[in-house]
Amino acid sequence: MGLDQTQWTQEEQDIVQRIRKRVIEVVGRNMELYGVTLSTGHLYGLLFFADKPMTLDEMGSEMKMSKTSMSTGVRTLLDLNMVNKVWEKGSRKDLYEVEYDWYQTFTDYFANEWRRAVENNLQALRRAIKEIDRLLETSEPSESVAAVLKNDLQKIRQAEQYYRWLDRLIDTMEDGTIYDLVPKET
Amino acid sequence: MGLDQTQWTQEEQDIVQRIRKRVIEVVGRNMELYGVTLSTGHLYGLLFFADKPMTLDEMGSEMKMSKTSMSTGVRTLLDLNMVNKVWEKGSRKDLYEVEYDWYQTFTDYFANEWRRAVENNLQALRRAIKEIDRLLETSEPSESVAAVLKNDLQKIRQAEQYYRWLDRLIDTMEDGTIYDLVPKET
DNA sequence: AAGTTTGTACAGAAAAAACTGTACAAAGTT
DNA sequence: AACTTTGTACAGTTTTTTCTGTACAAACTT
Image 1: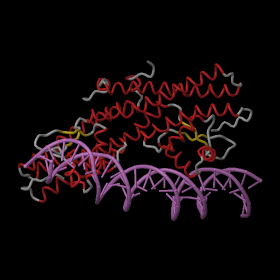
Image 2: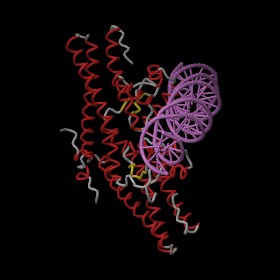
Image 3: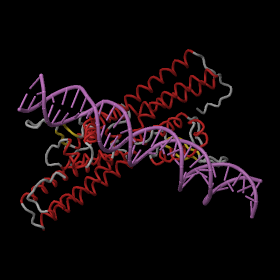
Image 4: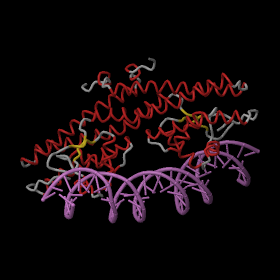
């Protein structure tokens, strides 16, 4: 686990590794909430405890997995802003380290993933609203059709209202005002 | 799509179905954020537009999928509080309808899924802190080991602080005060 | 109680996703 | 320019997940 402190006793290394392993296990498992694989979660945990930025080869040897998998895993974490690419003169390998600001990680997740979903949904809903409106106005539907259309419209409007709220919630994460509303310190 | 209004023209049914289908498609796809399958997302969309609570058989025939799949899909949605079981005298089949309060759906998701993850992580982190503290105090580690332990400890403490914040954020969702902080109406 | 109907457990099939090894382009070194 | 090294594209394999059909228990009806 990157503990290449050759002057350590075996026992000392074991103890540290055992503690780390349990944390990595739990944190990694719960990262499925972010839509990442258990393996990728473990990779994240590994990087979390790494004493220095790591290369793909180092990760591969620690995780006992192929470099290809490390490459894709790291890219997933990069996309989620959970890991940063680090430049270090001397080495021409790419180096990666976790983003230790977990507040940032959390809010970025919303600002990126959830925002995208919300915008998609809003666009689809608004398009549907427009279409239904047009149908109701121009094509003189029968009474029963009109009733169904109005019912759909009402549901869609309600959903749209929710997404507008969610959009504002995401705003507070993106611009950091969420920390005024729910302060970091108690 | 449940439009068994026999007096409708084919064209009218097609129009309504087309509009619904697009919304279902988009909403269903983005439900992967909640960790549900695309199929389950579509099932949700189907129920969203259903004019009345549906049975498993009806869902199966609309989705062109087996009843078994409907059963598991509905259970997933029930677990997420996205769908409710509805009682209706006369029918002895189970009936389901979506939870139309999407604010509730969203906050429930946090109150359940995220809360569970946060509690797991907090427990693991605190256990690790305790272990490291004990190691530092009792087992007189070498200088370099102590340095690593302290470094780990610092990272873990920082993570713990974040989770405490997240816990409080989830509190605001669970007790509804989030709507004071980020109002539903603009 | 015998006969239906309904939901789900379970095993197997189908589909999707994760993972690996090879190949190679891009970038760095000599 | 020839030679290394590094990251990733891609094809094939393994593993996991989803989906289906059958079987059956629980609940309801007669």
